[in-house]
Length: 62
Length: 367
Image 1 (cartoon, rainbow over the protein chains, first blue to last red):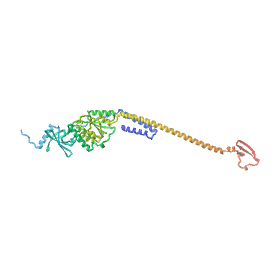
Image 2: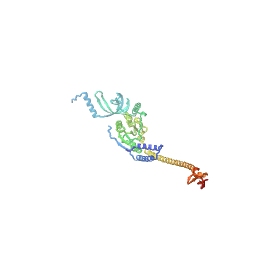
Image 3: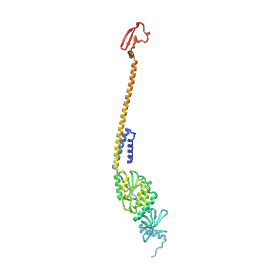
Image 4: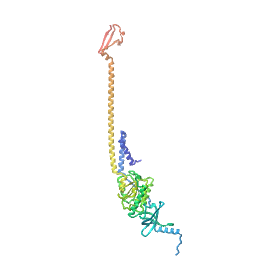
């Protein structure tokens, strides 16, 4: 399932936190860094390209 | 010509039929007199001018707010003859008219709703930021709609906006806005935020948003609400009842979503920060590896040195104990027939022995 932008942002925040913590592991760091780049690219793409979807509800108000 | 003889009930029915055909609805403006509220639900009053007075009947739900004698109002009503109570105008909708009355009505309603706690800050909920789905109530033809969509789209994307097009002024505005709020609140998948907006106008134009029905609908909304009515200086009661108030429709869009430019800049900052973190962590890791390698080499060197020292010591001991070293100290080994002589009893007189010294051999005869 596609992650929402909020979920991606939260995952990115976790990665930043991991990098700034003491649990550094060189193998994991490579994976996490790669994932962070993927998230950043995806968020950049979404921010630049995603349009809002507007729909008018057909309802009887009278 | 003979007239048909009618019963009173038949006459009332005939009259109502005629009235309904001739005047399905009338709009009458005048001053309120003898206002009465019955059982918290029914309202009775007269609408009058200098010469005439007409009885009016309606429900409290059709009123835009508290009504008092002396107020100027405009009602849309159906003329009806009640079988027992006589003629009245059955109110469909009621609006305050005249600046003085509008202000007074708004003040009265504000006091009443304030007392009930509808504007209390502790009722205010926070709005999801940014929302995924927006329920929008406004007129599709309005500048408010255009400004809101324009600013929202410039700032952020990926939002689903469902819009109900309503009249934002006039006699149908209140009922349409209330119904739209109700429809959005009955959806199986509720929107994250309910947005009610309208551009600037006269206080008369903005009246619907200070009506009791709209204010109560906004206050009762299960969906957190954001209301922006008129210009910055206008304050409607619906705005006070909302979870969040914006000064204008454009401002409403600004409050709802972040600006993508600042988010992009923020992402770029995050990327730099991560690069720096990775670089610094990798450097720390390499430094640690180097330090460990250094420690390992040092430990290895010390272990080897210790081993050499032990071997040397052993070597010295062995050397000290070796026969060669003993010979050097002045001892000699006596052999007879290639056997080491350990006792004088092994030797007979005149036997020849072989003596080994540190620097060589000599033969000797035993006496």
